[in-house]
Image 1: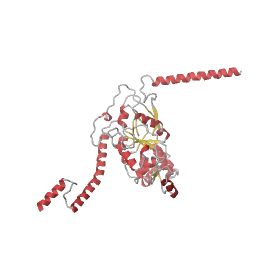
Image 2: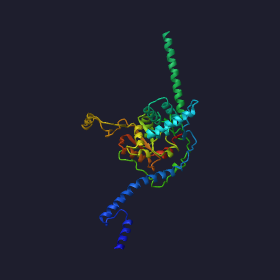
Image 3: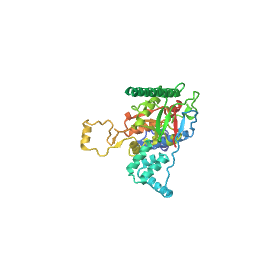
Length: 146
Length: 243
């Protein structure tokens, strides 16, 4: 009996989710285990895919072509001049970014993608009293290159 | 006196016409001869990228050959398997010529968005001019996720909020066009999007497209540029490195 149980357990382990000859409670337990594995496998696959992508991107080198076409670098935007209270403004901008991150996470993600010039411009709008809806709209406009 | 004025005007017009035709001829010379255009009668086009006008054209070096990562023919599969021509049943694939047209129409007039659906690390290596980076990881999120909500907002979709009784009634009776309406979202003003990634063996943009359709984004507003960065570079087309 004991040996039978061990044999059966080994078989059920080896055949995974195909447990047709198992009793009802054990079948239920197997089904639950299968469901658990299935739900945990999906994110695992996604993470695997992302790590494969990360590994792959390291193989890409900057494209160097002679001639007029090819890679054009978008020039780094000119810095927007700030007044003498740069340190205080820097702190205020941190506060603005923290607020954005806390209340509008998605918008904050887009804001982070903008070039420095646009971020500074948006921060200045905010500092000058632009309503948040306008600030968010501007972030989207800048992201859409308008 | 009047005759003299008329004669002078005709002379000016003739000389202006001559000048214009000469300028046109010089322009034709500049892009004529061995110049490799994008397509017949279209030497190049311009798109706005990060606030700057970028000229999109082909490499003019007749001996140019694609080298580096995008010249590779073999990739590990899975995960980098050849993708079907259409990511879902009703999302069509387009090629370069259709993408040029999109760039000069919907993208230019603001009714369209060109989406680089790759992860930011790929985008930073270089992108197709006019693209914005909305990674597939973001576009695969659920409808309640803030990142997806923001993406939908960028793409012109609107949350419907409370639908009035009569509005609902009109919709139920079929008196209102509900083609681009879902229970909670209004996609009528949603932008036409072209989604792309690394090429025919890249699964990032198909995932992004499925993510969008899963949240109700209309399939007739989505197109898939399957050639992606690989085909774009194979044709020696301009890319930009975002900063």
